[in-house]
Length: 339
Image (cartoon, rainbow, N blue to C red; front, side, top):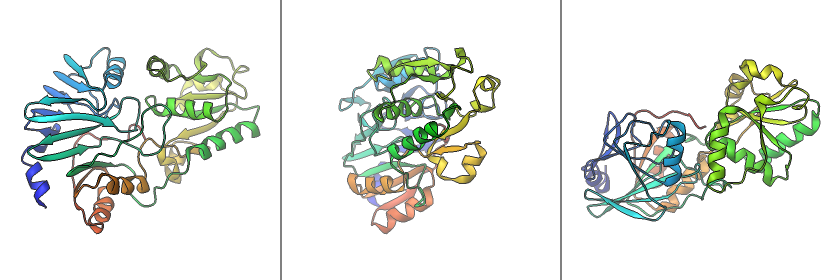
């Protein structure tokens, strides 16, 4: 372990609740309710209810209020990208992560060291949120959801073209696409719009609140109609977006012979596609793939890299081969919730 790791570990530690910044007395994306939390983004494995005080982007705070019945902490503070606030002896700044609306990397400066906690991120363009910004640092703490060389995601427009080609091939059937409610749903909608699909899109009721929230923050999703209010004839030849697993629910019986799709980075794994019952797997991920992860290591120029929640071993091995001092960091409470 190099000098950067040893210096930072004096004030940034892994606890049962998650990553804890002792010098600032706050947790980052804690796995349970804590007195003070800094939150990278609104997915449920990173943003949980019940905290005393929460610091995040205004979008993430709004997402928390929407998902948790108004609960974004007993007190909350919104921080814009590029702004800095002092928490205890630590300077805290948020920079775009490119993951979902409001997602942020957390930049910590203390004791002459700069640490970047990536949260979840991706490097490719997303029409629903600002792109990831590389930040030079001494220690980079990265996710590793797709941290194996086998994970190289195809271009998004290629996957959207697959969906539209299938729709043309089966005009009498409806296409039911499984999408996670925060980030994936809105991104797939925008990718369809950019591909020239101007017809109304039908959405499951579970997606409505967050789609409206994206609209409130200026992401124009165009015309969305409630799938649960439409009859079978109306849905013929249409695209319906719903949470993963919705094809197995009783409401799906109203769909006319649906082609079941699933939009996820895991759809490149055939066993996962079969498990989800995906006739049309769409490899669209909100996480960095192998090439994006390794490119980020070069871009941030951090001598020290800590790898967490994902396939740590391969990424640690790669980073060490490239001359970084790299270590796996085991943080509780992370899931593949957003895929």
